Amino acid sequence: MPTRVVEKTVGDYRIVGYSLAGEETTIALPELNVCFDAGRSPREIIAIDNLCLSHGHMDHAAGVPYYLSQRIFVGTSPGKVIMHRGLIGSFERLMECWAEIERHPSPAEFYGLTDGEQLPLNRNLALRAFDVNHAACALGYSLIETRHKLKPEYTDRTGPQLVELKKQGIKIQDNIDVPLVAYCGDTADGKFFDLDHVRNAKLLIVECTFFDSDHLVRAKAGRHLHVREFPDILKRINSPNILITHVTRRTALGAAKRTLQKTISESDFDRITMLMDKPPRHARRQG
Image (cartoon, rainbow, N blue to C red; front, side, top):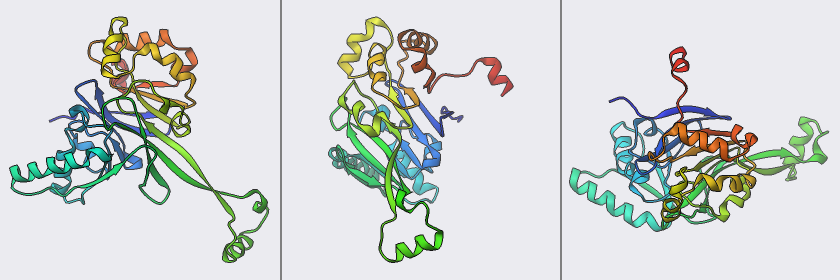
């Protein structure tokens, strides 16, 4: 069966994913070994070791059992499935049900986080959770890289001198946290957009579900973003690259893109990519 995912490069990052409101959302960053949400678990995410679940709605979470099952099937270790701590018990019971149905268990490693908590993914990369404004137990995540910078007072020292200072137990570097990617999942507007590790991420992945003027009530009821909110939100965001996901089928993507362009400034529009936007037919043929 052919894959449905799309692949795009946004800023420094390759994105592999698919996102339509109410149907399926999964956003993978293969080079960072991280996937946000499971959707229906397309094969492209199975090899990724860190699966971060934003909330428990089926269009984002249904693929979790399949992801775990397929990793065992292809002979890899269980991946880390990271979610709000309040969802852990439900997913443990879900995997028990599947073990009963299939007559064998799929090993799972669930990690629970709450607002402000951080989980190391490797030596220099950590995942930080933050509350978003959607369903119960809904989280966004920031990927934060720790970089080491030589302190100014030691910049004129030679390599051997620096080694000697380190042997003496002298700290010669400062650790700097750099927010690489922030993923907001499904959400209405909220204070989380003002967090430094969200607003200053090199790539911000954010939903914009509704674009028609008569969908404002739907947006509010479902705790989703409407395009009319974007001018104020973008004033708070410094990210040079913004990826929009979760557009409803109620609005054609071309119409949604034109509405967005009319609603926000030209400079803001230049930093936005819509995940499901396809190149013109002639460009696809040339590719």
